[in-house]
Image (cartoon, rainbow, N blue to C red):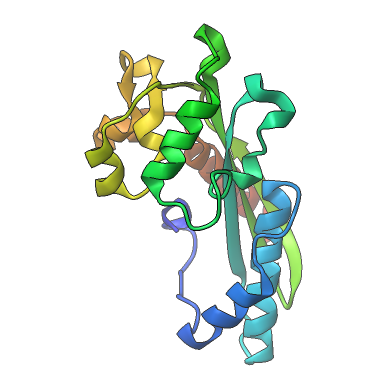
Length: 197
């Protein structure tokens, strides 16, 4: 997880427990915070049972669409178009769902939660939201296929002259005060506040 780079040594989990965690249903919860906590605690229980003492990180995020009110649930961003749909089907479904929205009603954001757990217990949770953008009415299918994740192809960045998030260069993305940048600041503050042994 790039957001923790320089603050922690990251270790990949054992491959033999991945299938079991997926079967448990690691995306259960009403908020991205609850889902992130569920993922972290599930993985940490498995690692703890295997004799590992690692601090486990779980994350979850969702697209914010305030104008849709109760007709949109950020925790279902990946699944709102139906189970097993690909990135283009999700993008098409979102464009159809929001076709009636105009102007500032097309304002979007992203909420990301990161939870830390050990021995099945969540020890810390951090949440941040991105700077807002606007939802496009179309997208380049090649961009969606190339990147895999469909939201950046639909995300218009007013602060970059209306260019799409998917079009930004890495150094331009680094200048955005996005959710990952905000989470990184929270982590740094939390770690700097921890008492030293």
